[in-house]
Image (spheres, rainbow, N blue to C red):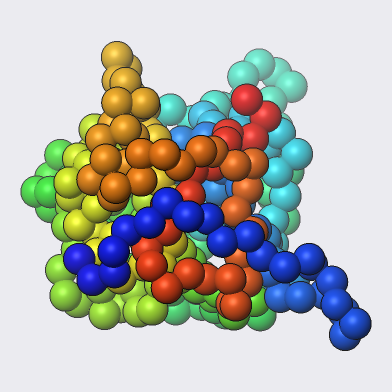
Amino acid sequence: MGRRPSFLLCVPLSPADGCGTIALMEITWYGGSCARLRGREGVVAADPFRSIVGPTGRGLTADIVSYGHPDESVVTGRGSKAKAEVTSHQLGVPLPSSLEKAFVLDSPGEYEVHDVMVTGVRTFRDAEPGAARGMSTAYGYELDGVYAAHLGEVGHLLDQDTVREMGHVDVAILGIGPQLNAAHAAEIVGQLDAHMVVPLPLTEAAAKPEADLDRFLKEMSATEVQPVPSLKVTISSVPNETTVVLLEQKGR
């Protein structure tokens, strides 16, 4: 797999110095596959489905929204007072009201928005590929010099073309659950040669997300890691060894 896994967490420097604010990426988990990536150059909300953050977004704001797949359980307006919904362009996913002014990405491609470079790469939500759960898009974001990949609900090992398109990865954000077993999730981390990995436990009916996550941590030799409110990382704080970071769910 390349680097030897570790559970040591690198803590960044203070966010200010004599020349101004240090370039810093902060990653916060909102539940499911939804994460916010915040830096000086912009703010990204990945997979802010209304089934996770509700119709108002729970105060979540961003310059850029990226959706990896349709939301099967979106919250829709009901009754005579329900207003017209703003939706994503390709997938038609209803946006939370707090994100209606954001620039929305929901398909593969290369983008530059608010000085944030984004690469969308075609993936699938199963190993078939896509026959059972459909297609998805994995995104790479270059924000304040740190490159983070959000793979959402990817359900298969990556081929060489996908790894090449994703490029260099400092932080891999990866859904762990019924669509992707722990061994394959750990192998994806190795395929990407990621310096840091943020596993997001995904749930379905009768699922046990803690068991899925525990198996992944065991695969990564990181059973002693403890959750933190957010991950703050700078270029200089990216570790050499693969580091697992658990995040607490915001607002839970």
